[in-house]
Amino acid sequence: MIISIGSDHTGIDHKCLIKNFLKKKGYKIMDFGFNERNGKKVDYPDFIHPTVKYVNDGIAHFGIVICGTGNGAAMIANKYKRIRAALVWNKEITVLARKHNDANVISLPARFIKKSKILEIIKIFFITNFDEGRHRKRIDKIPINS
Ligand code: RB5
Image (cartoon, rainbow, N blue to C red):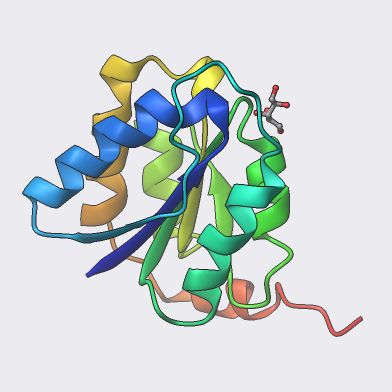
């Protein structure tokens, strides 16, 4: 399975932990940066757009995006037609993002999730399946034409 991942400067450490964890589990990781640990501050859209486009284009199966609040990254991700991005910060929200929303991208708020908690969320995201049933009809109603 191919996972696309990207962050701005706030998410470098979280991204590194996630990448190492997923690589050990056999996932193929495509990292779109940012990776420079030199104090440079970058604009999150420059890294989140390519990360999410990779999922939207069907190359990666899932995406993980990270910024300080998770909001900017989620806003970008949800501009893409085939993306359902969920802002997640704990296990319960993550389970429901998969079960109810069939999220194919998660957005993590680096400034509000302890690094010690991040792998629990990642684990849960990848082992939880979409519930289908009534939720299929609902996610089918999400896209707009305008
Ligand atoms: C960077 O300071 C911060 O604005 C960014 O990481 C993110 O939180 C935006 O939504």
